[in-house]
Image (cartoon, rainbow, N blue to C red; front, side, top):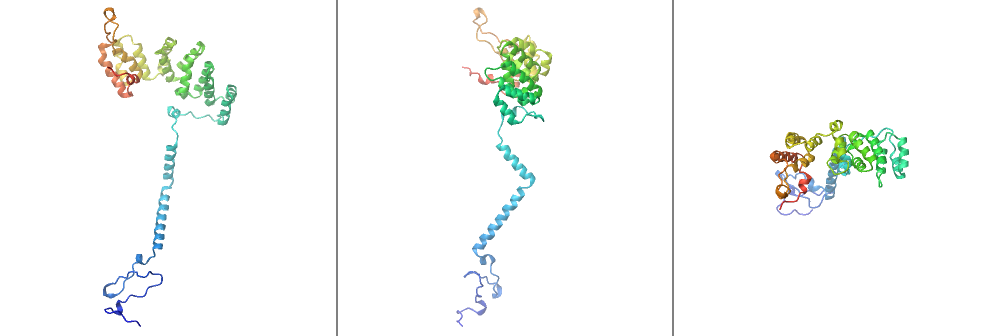
Length: 325
């Protein structure tokens, strides 16, 4: 038997290593010289430690995923993802899409008819007379150069009967306005459609013609003055039109309060020239500066314009005006 090292006793001798332990594992001595339990961490092989750590991390990930995949959370995540990827359609932002009828034409048939031309679309319209999509396609087809204004207006009228909200569509307004500049028969039909078939949007188109330079200026003004048309007009259009036709500055002064609360760019376009003086053309030999038409109430008009711009934004004309030198 080997001799013990000097200065040690049998009770202090290290116990023999257990199978599966590392050589040199640390042993902690307790009070009284009895060996304590070997540290579990020190006695565990490194490979086993990595295995346990990885398993714990996997359990945590699975648990978190289970929490996220409850019905409400998953629905919110999917909805947010779809909303982020969805294309922004300007047409969809303009107005809500009318629900299609139960007997609507299948999309592939409509596409084939549109590719086939006017006759194919008219045949399809006979089969599906309540689907506004067909009449919109017909309207656009007839508006292609050279435009067939009367036929385009007929399709537009049917479209508006089936889907009154289509009056807000830019294509409908463009085609009806274009027809107003066409042959006399088409021009009359366009004015009729503006006055009776397009609600407030038709009144807006009539106003644009009445203040413009087209040959229909006077006819559009007369249609706009009809009680039924003005009843469908927006408050902004009504006050702009009243300011435009008012016979005097005093009459316009009485409308300024309404213009402040209801007016838009069109009211500004009427009011601004009333307080703008001309450089020349008045006085002796026309050499003097002309006084503004409503200079006596210029302060009130300026206040009204500023209030309208604060509510609706600056007038495009004001933004485009060159800086004074």
